[in-house]
Length: 128
Picture 1 (cartoon, one colour):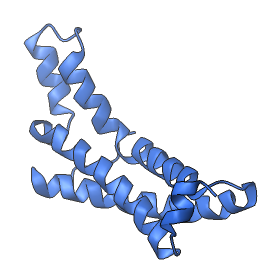
Picture 2: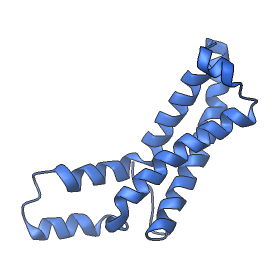
Picture 3: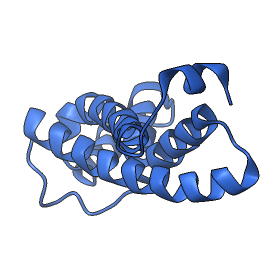
């Protein structure tokens, strides 16, 4: 889903801002999923994975859609339509950079949530 990105910077700064938003969302989602997951008997890896995936869906899906659309959609055959579509996107030159940092931010946020709540590597890998 697209959220208002008009206030964000361009280039690397905008990518890092998008990644920070994704990290915060993933962190909060992990905290919520930790409560639900303990009651359901979920492993820490399942909680991390779900927090990551939902954070990516909430924060990065709009940019990922734009990235795929502009690279692989065969429907853009006129220059005018392409100009209209690009005008709707914030910083179209750096969509790939934003998507990368949104993915990294989501993983870092979920990982920080796990670490803050006393993560145990052996338990994570065992799946207990």
